[in-house]
Amino acid sequence: MVGVAIGAMCRNRTVAFLSTFAAFLSRAYDQIRMGAMSQTNINICGSHCGICIGPDGSSQMGLEDMAMFRSIPSSTVFYPSDSVAMERAVEMAANTMGICYIRMTRPPLAVIYENDETFQIGKAKVVNSPANARVTVVGAGITLHEALKAAEKLATEGINIRVVDLFTVKPIDVDTLVTSANQTDGKILTVEDHYPEGGIGEAVTRAVSTYSNISVRCLAVNGVPRSGQFAELLEMFHINHDAIVKTVKEMIS
Image (cartoon, rainbow, N blue to C red):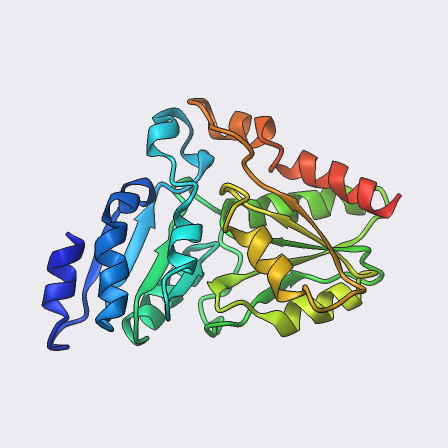
């Protein structure tokens, strides 16, 4: 499938999109890597990412896909968090040179953005910014929605957090991350439905590594998951809203 897409694009006569489970793209890494070497322009959509696919089981859960695509030279990695962001990601990918990867979440997600919301590659969205926020929580996809739930719960206890939607994991919006951290006591918490290696946590940590006043804590899927309802799995691997609430309290204590 990847080889066909690369072939279709070899003379730039079409805009090629291909889609499969994010987990299955690992078997095509060699073709994707060589496509980057030959400066191909293809758009890859990885569905059923993360443990949030639940009953499908661990063999179907793409938990290393961001690491794989972040390592591709000149790649762009989109991680939309609702249907509006998804539509914009597809439009931008079609008009962006190089290999574009769109990480797609399976469970239905609430719509966060208005239909006319504008997005840019390399620009994050601050979706919750109350006064006197103590921690910046960074997420995407299912974990962004969990972060918003956590923000509501914490607010009832008098604790405010800023919530940032990355939108693109590569390139990453360093300016928004640094500005947000500086306005929340230098504290960032990342939450992702992905293994710790090569995901959002490592991308954010690298982005702010030269700022000595900023500290980052990371919540991710530590260990091989299993089949179950997605809410149960989010709780088991400590990436749901309750885990975010608990970690934020630890960070400000």
